[in-house]
Amino acid sequence: MALFNPTSSSFVVTVSRFDGAGVKRTATITLAAGELKTYTNFLDAVFQFSGGGAVTFQSPDSNKRFIVSTEVRTGGTRFNTTIPALEFAGSNSPSFSAGITVDASSRTNVGCFNQSSVPNPIKVTVFDNSGTQMVGTLNLNLAANAWGQAPVTAVVSGGYVRFEPTEAAVCYAVVVDNGTNDGRFISAAEYRP
Image: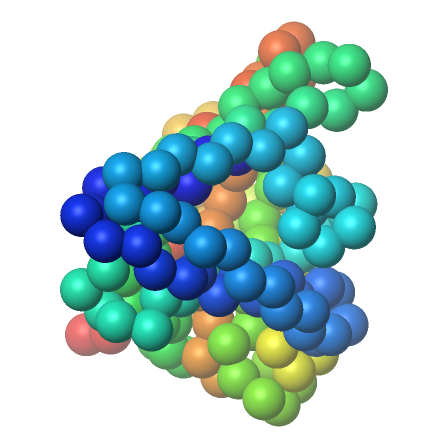
């Protein structure tokens, strides 16, 4: 992973990691003007941790912008999932990740970060590419401030996922190539008619 400060002044980034139980760990990283910091294993270097979770980055001044790039190495193999910055907090509106596939060459994982301080049951429904045929459901039952992820087990090609959180959450899908382990991150777009 890399953090880049494109501004002309130094500032501190507060990094918070939330695990599946909602436990929060916080660290700070100082970025000098124009500095690029790279990490082979960000979670280990900053938090002495390995595993899954949600990570948030925040600077004290909203005008201080930084760029985050991710790359993950597992078991000596390198694979890449680009994760875009989220500018806004999630809500409890339904959200959708379109373009998922589960077949012999691809798998899909869905996940959410519960941004609320109370438990958040999230209903996940998988639809085929026609949008009229439901092909599967699952539930993510997240503790307060917790992250969780689960596989989609239904076979689907070019389908989509609907997330229905009870409380504020940010959700996503990741379609992973089974041959290379490269993932395509699909941020869920919120929609409330």
